Length: 486
Image (cartoon, rainbow, N blue to C red; front, side, top):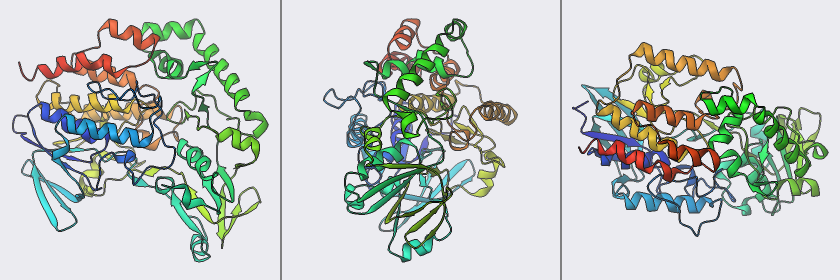
């Protein structure tokens, strides 16, 4: 696509920053729009809840060409992650390009150009670019379900928040707190809130496995943040090592041992929190890191858990499906996010969103039926820095003509095959089938194969035996970028 000179990027979170940095390396003029007053996306101060950390350790959660500082905690705090992203943006000259407080209201594609309209604090604006990359993320629009009687709850003085809005434990001070959900954010919020609340309840539909930071004294990163860990839970085996692990029964034994250890350590049966599904069954984005002190406070009675749902609200009284009634002052919904792209016209959305709401994205990047458009960061995963980094690189290689452009039929077939594959296992595990888990590294390998730059064998060995360290991908990334210079 030789006509592409200017690229517009929407969103200055993790994916938007690495997309902008990569486009600059390829010589493109970049226009980067961010609706908030700061960068970071989910890591920005306006969206961080107390105690939030990534699922990864600092040596597995970074871009290949900039490590996290050594003084960060093993599992970095949310503010540390934002500081890292800011340092990354400044080091690679992305920060000056960010147009903060620029919310995109609508876009259109005319005469091989994207027309971007939006507003900032002072006025409206219009920009024109040759290619558009959407990086607004899969966690962009907080979802709060509609419950009968919600108005009466508010009228009685009750408060409702999404977990991304619970920014300070002062919000729950001396209140009867109820948190809805069983995600990591639900556990983080209910644990933090229990420090100040008058009473604390967690209501959930299904218990999920929570991984301790250490299993039998071994850092969990060596168990789950490696190619071995991915191989243990993948439904399909793609190479000799993965097939060998299953043939000798290692996967079954290791997973059974982990479940037994976790169950005893967290006293899951005693507290009624033992998941009905296995770790492998919940591996599609549902198994998350344990929140410090959560299970301890459940055992102490400081956090009361109930596997139930809210049927309706009557004033400050919650009517539950198990027949109980519960008084509440603050109701926090850790119920995930809607996946929306409000600035794209329906004529484009209808091209790549099917009747079930699945996004038809080839390689989780190119939308079916819409030209000069790409997505980065739409394959939610535990390895999002490296998956977004190589997705951005894939886009630039595609623009340079070094990746063959698939036909619409090829794109439809590939995306339909992926959605069908996911639906065999946990169809409700992740938002609209976008997650590549539990095959994130397999997905990165696929992108590298498309770019004709597989990871060297000597880098694969520590990936299997230790952890997936993004620094080991630095050389292969440089090799790919260097083609643009030579």
